[in-house]
Image (tube, rainbow, N blue to C red; front, top):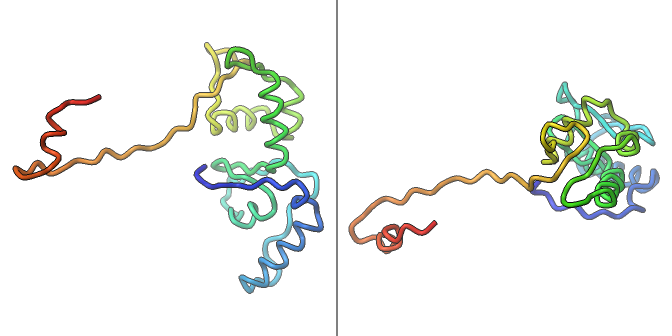
Length: 157
């Protein structure tokens, strides 16, 4: 999720995607592998790890663990969430699920991967919990002449 993505809707048109893929194949000296996903396909499951993340990003798909979702569909999905949000919570509706074109089970797994959480075990009401960032704590060697020794003694939290 640390990647920066520029969403240019016209670049997701079939001819633009075909041109990018052709250029990508020339650049990487690839012959016939990596076919373009079918037009109209919004959601892919990569449970066998057979897809190339960079290639599918080039085709307009964003990766969420084993799932790939077209970025234009993600934009529409997030707009629906924004429209239906009240007091930081929103209710899942069939339009949201149909937009992604995935099974109900995969939809709820995707919601979890995007850091949306159920409110009070209600399967239909969700809220956003923010981006989970892994933090590594840095330990300093406690040397007598360390400039950080005084800072460490301040016990700031």
